Image (tube, rainbow, N blue to C red; front, side, top):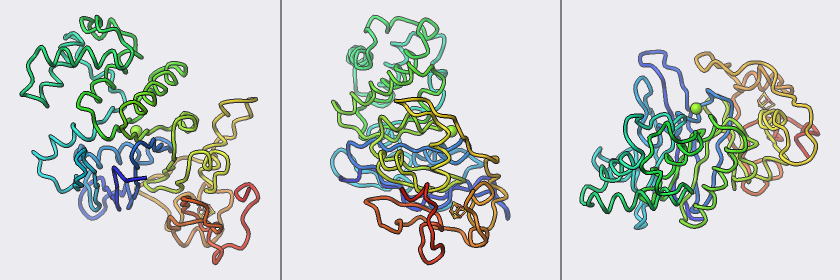
Length: 340
Ligand code: SF4
Ligand code: MG
């Protein structure tokens, strides 16, 4: 497919001075037009930082230390978001790229009606529009996400959590963005509501043709909706492939553990295995593979040399993995569970 968002070598540090913590290390990711790219990993692995940094919403002490973020606009022109002026960024960010943040639904102002908040949001970016045209658009947007337009008169507390989250999605879609980034958009909701909302976003994607980056700690949510999945650990992407390939045949030991710790969507529930050990302390990463302290396959080479993201031995279609096991020069034998 044609790339609509291309993140290249994006790095972020927290803290200044001689000893900053590297929370994102040279992350590269491409989102193709019309695609849903799922980004998964335990909390603290850098997923949200990636979303904030790529849209330049990262606040101090977060600091982008390297990278490019190329966005293809509606007119086909490409721009590096990290090098746009603040003014160019303000218009681009909301026209071509929109974000629904974690906990977004609690950012609705409790004292104003839903309608007013959507209208104000639209007018902030389309100052030329009349208030009545913006109100019409607000009604359209609400119906787009399956909420009757008369709810425009409701206050946030009069809506369910699921409805409030739909309102946030409607607002994100107000300017018909090319790219929608959703960071844990449904985490606060029950499982049934989570699925309903994601299914609705996918329907809208089909109708309106935007592309989605869906960020979640819950890989099982991605399996149904994502076209491709990227898995992050300790500020890096450790595996990236077509969703079905990652789900059925994870190649990185961490991806294997992560998938093993979620029940299958269909069929009998299996025992959850989880991943032993605790998430890494980013300020004190081991010298070699960041996953080595928790990896059942770690050897001396893992503790000495840091693996890089590359193709697997059999160079499977589009799959990238960052693990020495997949480098035949370093390890002869691939454990059976990772070689299926
Ligand atoms: Fe495990 Fe070594 Fe692969 Fe890291 S490089 S995931 S420690 S086998
Ligand atoms: Mg997060």
